[in-house]
Image (cartoon, rainbow over all chains, first blue to last red):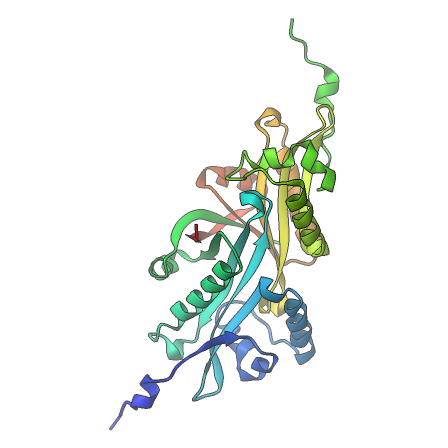
Length: 157
Length: 157
């Protein structure tokens, strides 16, 4: 007989900043579920991690670790663009949001977006933006976003 | 009688990086034609200029100066986002493109986009993206861009 453990239901799924040890907890494998993402060597990962760390609060990658499995099950990032418009204002750009299918329905996507949005607000941004697939519009509307412009892209490879 | 000077037609309209002295050449006034952009004090401008300079090639603001009037008549910016996906790839984000109406029809928008796109390519980006109004899609298509996703926004003020 299949039982549902109440402790599973009570799992906290806390959002925290990416740590260098998350490479060994399935962080890259999670990103591979989002898009083209080759395996990354430990050295390459460390190098990029340090590069991003130099930006301080201007670049944040957050994750949710599943305490039971020790795996990273959700992630997203935001970087802060400094402008001249809006009285030298700042804009948060949310990128690379993904939640593992094994934990869908637990509102982890909403938690990630909330964390990144709060970060943008607290660092003084006048707005936060993201680009998404048309299918994900209802999810972002539930997170308080509104559809505005159209994303255009040019690939070099 | 109104005459058209051939020297006007031959104006070069060279794209170059933003310089700190461009504040006195109408750079902020040009941005005001794009969106909400209050007057910026000289100190605030200098501070933001220096902040952006620290990013080196990862943040570029370019301008076109009209040699005749000494005014900045076109601008645009690109910043380079460093990711973990795509084998720790990079993406160029084009922002705040505006051409003064007095010089429209001279392909200055195309020059600005070409300059920013080249910068993204030469710094190793695998793609360059931008968000635009639906009315501007044909212009960006002429610049080699394709429509892809939808921009979502949340304002804090």
